[in-house]
Length: 70
Image (cartoon, rainbow, N blue to C red):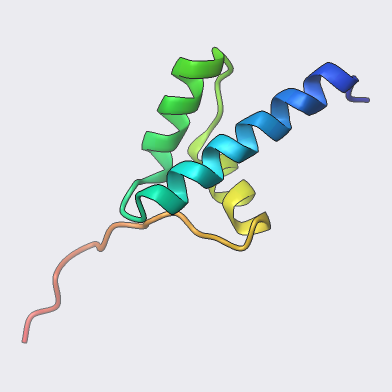
C-alpha cells in the first residue's frame, strides 16, 4: 500500500516525465529516466517512463532501426 508521501512523489515524477516529453518530442525514454533519477534519486526504468507516458496519452521517441533504402 502506498503512503501519501510516496503518492505525491509519483505525481511529481509523472509531471516531470510529461513535461520533458512535451517540451522535447525527440527525447528518449532512457534520457528521461536518467533525468528523473538524477533529480529525485529514485531509479526509474525506461519501460516505466514509456508506461507512464502512455497512461498520459503520450509516447516517448523510439529510434528507427535503420533508414529505409529507396
